[in-house]
Length: 256
Image 1 (cartoon, one colour):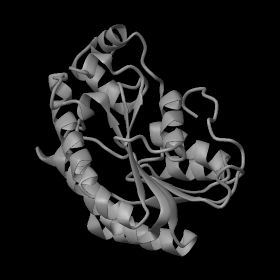
Image 2: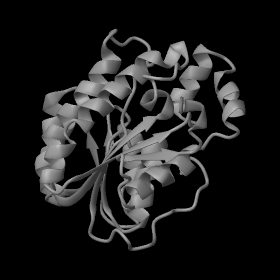
Image 3: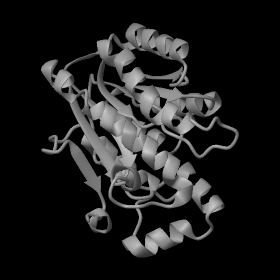
């Protein structure tokens, strides 16, 4: 795992559960799916272009139980359809879906890529995977405080396209909650501050040297990858908050 952190899930507590985490070949996604696997779940590791890394993780997690790697670009309907078929054939359905994959700061992407990935693809992906989800299943959407509170609190200019698109994605997914609940499907958002050691933090630091250190000083501390992944894993099993949002860390700077 990328950072040392205790697994918050009890051994065997997810025995028989079927889990898919998008963007889980590395970082937060990889640590999250490791926690699920260690708790006895059958897990599907999704990757876009890091197949070797995903297969290495599969090899490691197979010691706990069933683990498969499923490649898919969330913005490509054909590859998403193939992912759904693979999950259906391997698992028959899903009990936990973690929407972790996101982006928008990568170089060389189209101007609308952040919105396409963080809003449109999230909704389209959920609709594609929804037939695999039954009553009692849960969806977890992972975001940041900077995105969740972007309507009321400014963020770093370099992160703004990501923040706006992540919030748009969250809003679009929240609009589906009544229909999901009617089918017995639960939905929760996990919002955290900047996470040390992530690709996003690295890209922000590169674009705005000192940005992460400044945020860490203002917040008092920032979670590392393993610590935040533990909170994401807990969000998949603990009671749903009244506002469907699990806040990780202090949010006093964002409450205005």
